Image (cartoon, rainbow, N blue to C red; front, side, top):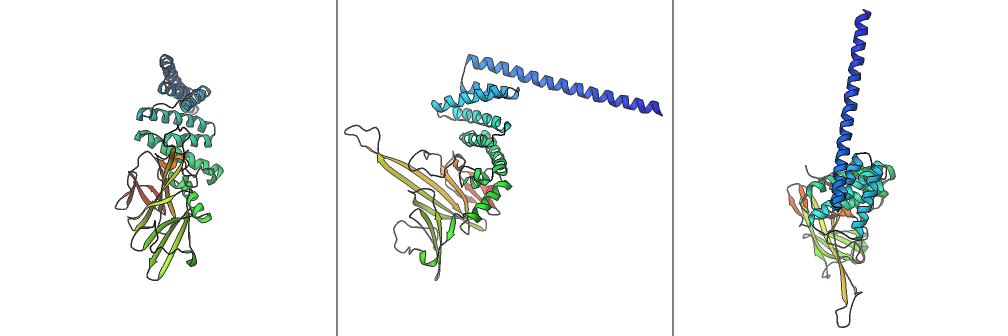
Length: 354
């Protein structure tokens, strides 16, 4: 009986050894192919040192295990693009997005979640839909890990969690939304004595026959009158100069969503102004607020055209609050179409529709 057992052990040992050899051989082949790719791309970059070639070379360096070289190269490329931005065409923006995405992955590999998140947020600025979806999924993943490590306060804007949920549903981000609603709700019920009289008032908008919306002293107010019963919600806005533009309800399945759009314009004297010229300049801003049936905040968005550095900018702004597409909001059954993105309400949050 010993001989067959010994033979079996020997056979197993030989098989394991062969598998190990084959695995090592396959790994060596992969490493060889990655190194060959790196060498080829290095030659291409040396012949034509463009942002696209440099970004491709850096990714090849990362895959070949040359992480320090990849990080240094990407930092140099991104700094050059910051100082002298490339032409703002779809191809150039997609390339810059790819470079930022690749640098974010290096930060992730080294545990730098905040730096990775910052670059992924900037990488959202691309018209390439396939690339955009990859970035969106990645930033939600990093945001969830960042929240798990440092809490919801690690997100750059008080409106980031809601904005990220429109990319992908995530339990950690939902908890951030729930915690914010409990600790510091965006809208609060007004005392009866504080509800303003909207009759004949200038600048108000009617969301429906019972609901009047107005902005006063940096507060958005939603006043609902049903018979003799009048209720009001007061919501603190994110900028000083916001003025009410439009307010309307969207019937999303069985739930009504209130969309309020505010606009801001700040005028000032132009810096470069010669005698005889019109020296008046102005910055413009716009914000879209989406509120649930009980006044809970569902989403805040800022159009891409709003300059984040202007005096009319939205102070809690962040790249994840922006879409490169700016379309009117619409409804299809139980789905809300926001800038062409299909969303649905699930447990009080707007998340992607299947």
